[in-house]
Length: 197
Image 1 (cartoon, helix red, strand yellow):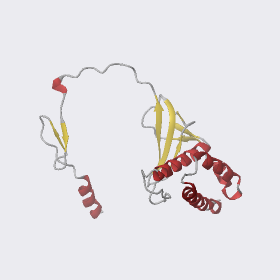
Image 2 (cartoon, rainbow, N blue to C red):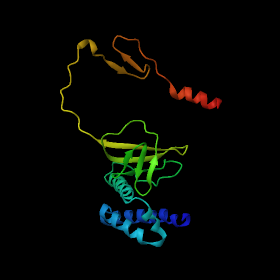
Image 3 (tube, rainbow, N blue to C red):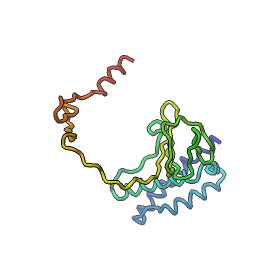
Image 4 (cartoon, rainbow, N blue to C red):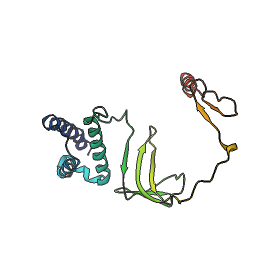
């Protein structure tokens, strides 16, 4: 399985070259629909059949991210997209639907129920979930939920409860009627601890 998966970066680079050549020839990028059709075709090839094991919506999200990156490049809003490296980018994937939370577990399509340490209750409708692995190998899930805010007017604020805050470089903040707050210098303190370590 590991050897077969090595075909995916090669295939991705071929698609990347194909996209560049298409743009040079026509002045247009490959459409998202074309990418989706090619992804379906890749699932049928023996060397990339393992793509069937992955949740289809997660793969579609990756295609949308790729399409957005190239669109931003072609419209001169960003530089040319680079391949994500294991050392440079944390492992992460996004699933737009079908992720559920119940009884201290999260339901991940194609995987099943996974136990989690839940920081707060989720009572609203889950719209999407982003799974991310940190440097220590722990996975985190961030949920986007939908709920309705009650249509209530904001209460009036008394003048005595209003304060001005000025953020600066020499001082972290100056608040009306209080002493200036010095900068915390997290970076320098961290450097000293890092040198000791």
